[in-house]
Length: 247
Image (cartoon, rainbow, N blue to C red; front, top):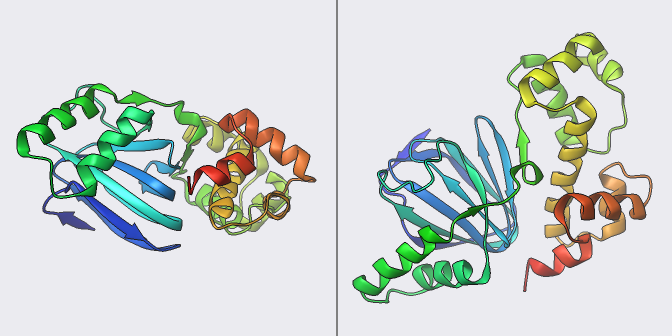
């Protein structure tokens, strides 16, 4: 893992599936994809970050990024002493129109002048508001057997094997795995798998995959069931979300 010398205020243009390797910063960092989709991973889990959201990364927290679709990744850096909400772990944030415009202004061109930039950064800090974290966060289990189960399902989210069947593959009893899922992720196994499938659907839709194909790839029996689950979790339809990635 690399220690980056400075968490800069900048704009990066990332191609589909482009990765930024594990690293950390001595500064606080606000990461915002103004287009495309970004997956932010830490040791505790991963966050999917669409254009209506940003993520606050506290100083010293190791993280990695991966883009889905053509992605504009905008970052604002703040001194480690600047942490108005006292966050010690990554937090997914809502990005209302004013905050979006402030971030774009700060990362889009060399100006404005230093005094105006300082004013804009103060506005950005005042506008930081947490979004419902459960919708965008997928906890990573620590137990080796759970990690094996998670890897199997991450590779094939539509896998319909039961926890007992997966347990036979990784060498653990269903009851043991069920207990560990609750303890390490604060979710039941069905809840965790449902969250994984929805997270995977976000990345597929970001690449232009159709709603029907995404539903089937993620293990839903029909598009209607997928649309209902997506709307309940993210507050919008898959098609509307897909349009928002390039708007």
